Amino acid sequence: MQHITSSTHVTVSYSKYGIGLPLVLVHGCFSDHNTNREFVKPLFEQQFTVYAIAHRGRGECECSCW
Image (cartoon, one colour):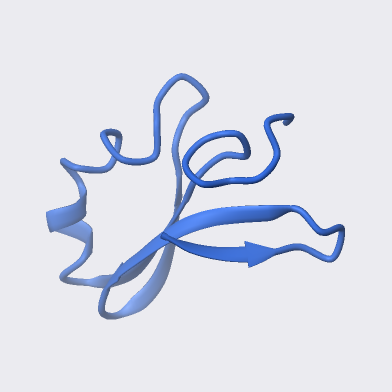
């Protein structure tokens, strides 16, 4: 996973894959960042550069509050 830190010093993790126009995916609140995307990844990664964001408190994100 890659990380980005906001101007308020909150670190958020994301996965980047594929080639093409950018597409941002954010999972729902009752799922996680890995299993939620395993079915759509093969479809999207051939047409888009996907930025799959993990909610804060999930994945490798720093803050557990939302």
